[in-house]
Amino acid sequence: MPTNDSNPSTDCPSSVVIHRPFGGVGGYRRISDRATRILVHAFPMSELPMVAAAGLLSTCGAYVMTDGRTAYLGESRRPSRRLSEHAADTGKPFARDCFVVGGCDKILAVDLQFRLTRLAVDAGVVDVWKGVNPPEPDLTDAERATHDRIAADALRLLHDAGCKIFHRFLVESEAPTETDAPTQPEVPADDPSDPVDCEPMAIGVSTVPLGSQEFELRYGGLFARGYWTAGRFVVSAGSEVRLAINHSAPALTRSRRDELFAAGVLAPIPGVVDRRRLTVAISFPSVSIAAKVLAGAHSAGRWVARDPTQAVWLA
Image (cartoon, rainbow, N blue to C red; front, side, top):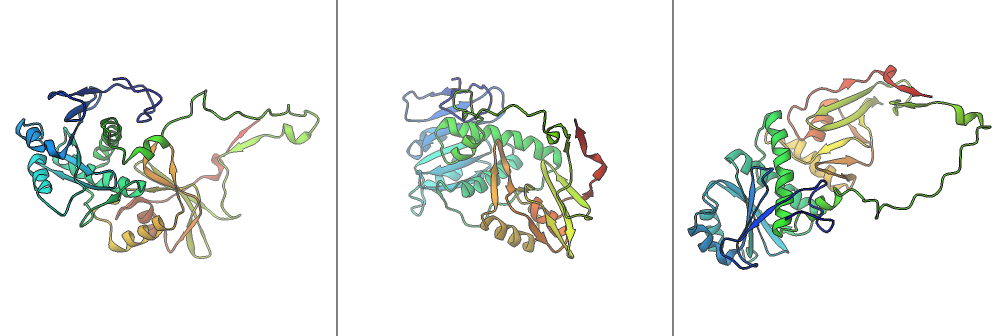
């Protein structure tokens, strides 16, 4: 079924296939897209015995159980067996509807549980029921890049399956169309008699205090800038903060990140689900601590000095 304007689950045209092997419209359905390796099984928990008996949940996957108010997110090598344990747990009455992301290997399932849990907490649509925080797997840069794309596909397919927990992130990624774009006020023509109008603009100039050296950090898709002042390292407003945190990150880094996320100074980045943007500048005791907090990693690379001569002048 092709997506349309009422379904903001993608920023480009796409198609999904919804298969209902048992018939009906409210029971089990399998949502897939030939452009991605994953698929989503969606069904009410009351149909779990039938779905499991059909062998539909026999491979590794991540899953969401919810009633629209509370959600539990997990992963398992055998989702049918793990979900049966949840269904028998009288302490989880919210386990009404289930969404299983299949087509995963073990490390992808673990990573999806970590990512989806973090996004569900950040979205604030439901209360996330959990014990210990799910671990973040140690990934290579190549694996992380692949998982970034797969996670975006998972969000889209979960949305099309009826899981609305992550709807906020999908809406934020939707670009305005010509019909809903705000009307721009008319701009008066430039007055060629004003000498200021003839001056060039410069791209890439520094925003740091006069005489300070500016540095930049790149880690995966993350980008940040900062500078030293008064013996402390200041990360500039507009720099990015990674949502995920590596399993190897020390406890102090985790507590600093918790404080940062609770401060309300991180804004969503349209079209990006794994990072947030700083709305204010943040001061750190050192460049190392700044990198660890922004990247959520024990070792996040080096801050590289920027060349101030790289500014581009445009006439």
